[in-house]
Amino acid sequence: MPRHLLTGEELSRDDLYGLLDRALELKAAPRSSDALRDSVVALVFEKPSTRTRLSFEAGVVELGGHPMILRSGEMQLSRGESVKDTARILSRHVQAVGVRTGPDAVLEELAAEGTIPVFNMLTAGHHPCQALADLLTLRETFGRLEGLKLAYVGDGNNVARSLAILGATAGVEVAVAAPAGYQLEPVAGAVLTGDPAEAVAGAHAVYADVWVSMGDEETAGERRAALGPYRIDDALLDRAAPDAIALHCLPAHPGEEITAEVLYGERQRIWDQAENRRHAQKALLEWLVADRQNGY
Ligand code: CP
Image 1 (spheres, rainbow, N blue to C red):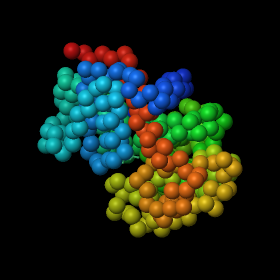
Image 2: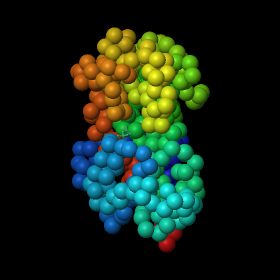
Image 3: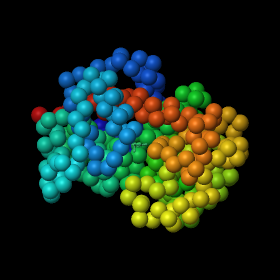
Image 4: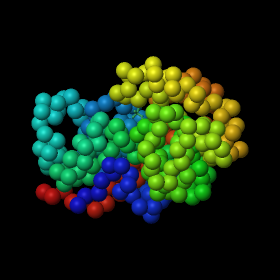
């Protein structure tokens, strides 16, 4: 069976720590690995992307491979070809496939029906590649993960869920502050609250995401009203640990979920976090193809 990354639950703590160690090595020496030499990695985008596309496309090239960008609207998938048949065809031509789509079930079916590693580049439920970069940024900033606390403030969405899952694996306490109706379902190890001040107390990182994610546009008005008290500003950061950093998965809306002062200020690590997508994902790609079995 090939390895996959669908939710992040596939990684043990040893896997995760090894992957982050490797990401730091690759960050220090970006061209030091040719783990994807003679390999093609398909990157299927059903939704827009800046960071994910840039970081995966550049990362695959740095690992000696060839990234193949596929927009799902241009594939026969958009005309009714099944995910099962698409998985079989992908498995005959490429060595791994990443997908950005809505339903998590699409990734599950690709993984079940294909013979190559499948990785999640964002679904409605999960964004594990983002969480890997976030944990790498924490590790890089504080030199450790165990015993840290991360406070996520805002919509209890796919990013919050992936942080809760992978944070628990890493030994990072994750607190999610969200208003009623926008809170994450219980995730083992995560603290859920409606109070941003409670969430950020003692936190080493305070994390924001957009209030209106892709697909939520129809409810934008009510989301902005409900999430208004969940903005990250300097006053909220002052309630966290003295050396706390601000994180944001981007794209940002300065003045909405985060102030411009925090987004571009001295306490943020947001732009390093965005760069860390590439380093973390290169380590992930190495892990995914380490025991490659293409079945043909
Ligand atoms: N954070 C993130 O996934 O960014 P993109 O949507 O630009 O890929």
